[in-house]
Amino acid sequence: MEGITGHVFPVYLLGTSLPDNSRGDQTLTDHLYGGDNQYRFCQELPLGIGGVETLQKLGHHHIASYHINEGHSAPLDLALMEQHLDSRLLLSPIQEDLNAIQQNCVFTTHTPAPAGHDQFPLDMARSVTGEELLHCG
Image (cartoon, rainbow, N blue to C red; front, side, top):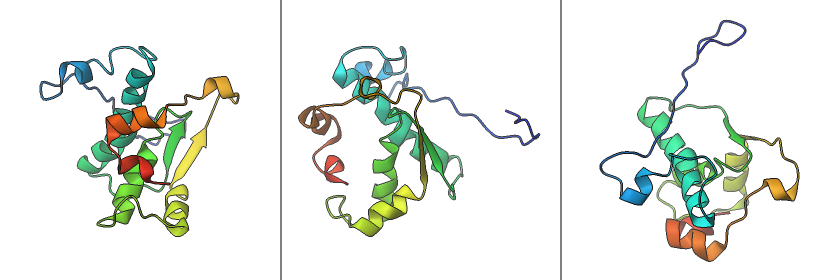
């Protein structure tokens, strides 16, 4: 894609319809804002965590900032923290770790009201991601 100043930048579209994924996971990117809370939460994981992993696999290792629009890609913070902590457990971040991740993230919203922001029950989120991932931060 070409920007208004002529700079050309790549646009990547993520999908989950892959034979290695379970049937349920294959449909996560079929419909925007579909399903129940668990389905919606699961939709955000490929965008956030999968987005970070995809960029790295494509050779984008030194990204100055990640743009989080609304909360839809918010799990990318968890992926960045996991990388930042390297071999340390996600259960053990300190304030300096959180500050380091905040320096790489830009958050925007077009719905600055509570109704515009998804909230997910912690137990449900942990059942999807595992206990360790959701202790971070």
